[in-house]
Length: 213
Image (cartoon, rainbow, N blue to C red; front, side, top):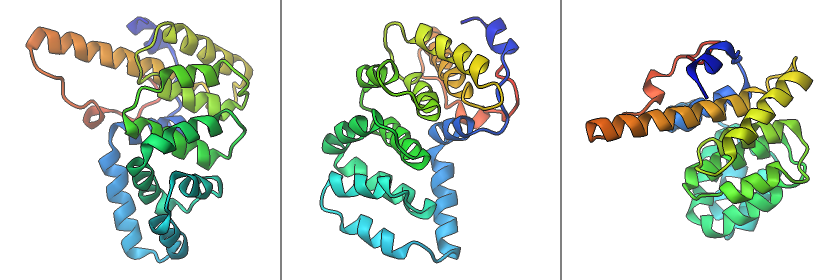
């Protein structure tokens, strides 16, 4: 992917994939906002107690299916990470089925935060029976964080598919941001190899614009 390609593609300034990508790069901001909100809004206490009392991953994933309150989603994700050996395979299995938008968003964040390499499973879901556009868009975004042969072609194809068939929607942002993430990680590797140090976090410099440059 060349700079000219990214310069010529439109990224929606406001879209779910764009927001989730920003959260992936700067999770501390999402946590800070959630903590502040929980101080001032009394809501979802019963659900929060269920999350804290959950004994296994199955109970937590059942809460995911029910569409948890936004105020409880970080604590739910943190609890899932404590049992990620059981939670991750279950989440991947659920992603092959139609799910609510909230479930998909939570699942993508949990998979990303686990740091496990789920590229083979994600590829199988993307190329398999899953046909929900929003699910595919966010999985394409997540796929961009992995190292996997042929992933660039897969994201390229989905980007153009969404742009052509869902022009009024923002689904194309998922694969486009996945490609953008691939490019940025490659740049970091080159920079690290040249300087002998690890490049800094990109999230601090991310600009919320309508173009990726």
